[in-house]
Amino acid sequence: MTAYGIAHLRQAGPLHPEVYEYLERIQATMDPYDGKFLVHGGKMEVAEGVWPGAVVVIEFPSMEAIRDWYQSPAYQEILHLRADHLVGDLILVEGCGPDHDSAKFAAELRAAGQRR
Image (cartoon, rainbow, N blue to C red; front, side):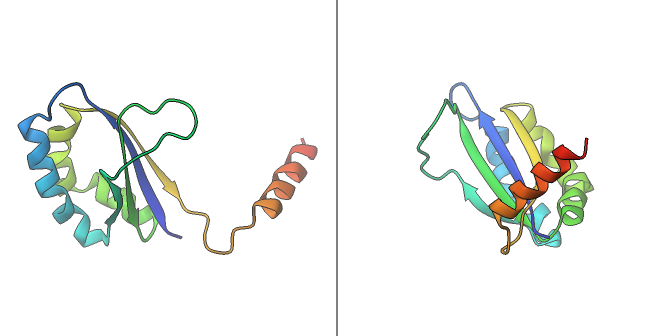
């Protein structure tokens, strides 16, 4: 099942030079794990709530692949270049697949709640 890394990054002021180095090096850390950017610095419109900052979405073939990438020596070597200069949150999440049915999902949740 495809997995995604979703980052919500916030900053105050201009980017620190180390963040540029991080951006220059990150793709090479993702390539061995078949990772790719789906959203990276695109125009954003907040439809509900407040969302200060930027969103980044990366895709990997599986949760195992994204975990292996995140824990890899190559990524860990550059992680501080971003983390030391941008406030942010990162989640790793498994996708739901092309056949996902939200009504069926709701029924499963409802049934699980009734068993408690």
